[in-house]
Amino acid sequence: MRICLVSETWAPDINGVAHTLDHLSRELLGRGVALQLIRPRPAEGTPGRRTPGMQAELQVKGIGMPGYPAVRLGLPATRRIQALWRQQRPDVVYLATQGPLGWSARRAARRLGIPLVAGWHTNFDHYCRNYGVPWLAPLLLHGLRQFHDACHATLVPTQRQAQALARLGFKRLAVMGRGVDPARFSPTLRCQALRQRWGADAHSPVALHVGRLAPEKNLGLLCETLHAMRAARPDMAQVIVGDGPSRRSLEKALPRAHFTGFIPPDALARHYASADLFLFPSLSETWGNVVPEAMASGLAVVAFRHAAAAELIESGVGGVTLPIDDAEGFRDTAVALCQLPARYAQMGRAARLRVQACGWPAVADTFLSTLDQAREMPHASARAYGV
Image (tube, rainbow, N blue to C red):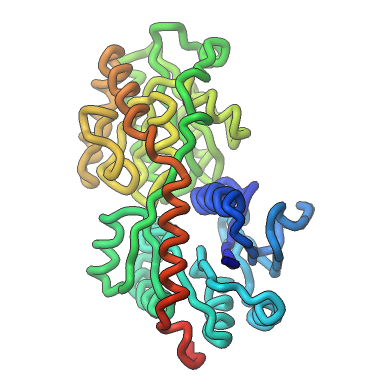
């Protein structure tokens, strides 16, 4: 099978979409699947070399998102995409973006009668609210329904997400979860020297947060929670891994926390394993890869009953999950838990056991099965071209 992946983002970008596609493509290449890639050209000054393993790669012009230039959008390139596909026709196209590049690839596939499968990687309504344009959400959802109606299937990460989109009128939804590598993320990587650099001894709790530092990540609650935890445990260390437009304001609000910026994968695994508690207040994720990574590393997780946390955590066993409207409960739970070392250690062990079987091979199985069905079931993309 030859699959073309269309995405706004790709490794070494640090985000959930790039992370998922990187692991998925590695698994597919290991099975002998032929892959093509269409993506925006890397930012100026970054080498635009072809991605290893790709049978063909098309890099299109890209622009930085207003207010967040690190996130790039691919510009339409319908003619160039059609030229590639006429020369090397894929069996099926996977659209990991609903941006201008995704619409362009959708148009080209419909013209050529190539089956389409799309992925739902972003909760756009949250972004509209957090970036000050809530009135745009209904219009955006209307356009997204139109986009996905042209596809044989739309892959979403959780059953809850599928149910929510179905209520909004989306059709042909299928669930494809995400994986984690328990060998890469492991409690055995715990590093006492790293903990000492954070000012933590053997008895001091370390609270960790990993993620993009941006308005949609509910960082106000993270800040409030960390302040309350320090009041209860003045000896605790607080570590925040990641970067983004909100980093500067967060550093001012949390002057005693350790901010690392983005760090290499091996260092990230050590940071997870060297902490004790993982705080994840975000409600904007469709999945949240950092949650299973923290669990695989043996951390007790405090999160809302949403996305990966809702799927993977039995509250009170591998961590604690709260109703999505219970910010006070999130803060109070974290404060109570940081004072119970035996309890959070027990939860961390249970969390590790829970994700042991959540590997990427099973994710790839679901992905390939869905794409195989798309090849065999003529639908919207085989119709005459239309927007």
